[in-house]
Amino acid sequence: MRKFLISGLLGFAFVSQVFAHCEIPCGIYNDEMRFDMLEEHITTMEKSISEIKELYNKEDVLSKNQLTRWIMNKDNHATKFQHILWQYFLTQRIKPVSPDNPKAYKNYLRKLELIHKMTYNAMKVKQTVDYKYTTRLRKLLKEFEDIYYKEHGHKHKK
Image (cartoon, rainbow, N blue to C red):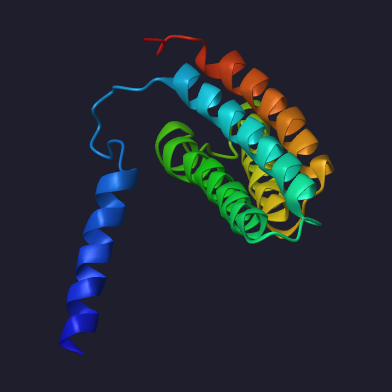
């Protein structure tokens, strides 16, 4: 039980250190970098799918090992993609809007909808090796980026 508690506490400390940006109001944001990272994660998922398809029918042990590594890589990048959406955009950048302001509220709901759709499609990337999900991610990301910058501008560029 003691080992479990210690490993759990260490795991929690590691996760919070690895994924934290800044949840105090530091004002230091780099939106362009996050959008670039999301694009790079999609490209990496696509590369992984390509390698998985190439290695799938090979019988040698090294190919099986590499197949496993590419599957893990695809899933890992899908999770990182989701984390940026949740931790950076949803937690820190998109502020709740009152329904009393219908235009702003509609825009807010659309951003939430796009984040949800991207999160869902990233999950589908984990479950499959179908490029249609990465294609959807690119389309949804572009739409989200357009809406986001229409409101925020590029004022946080570094």
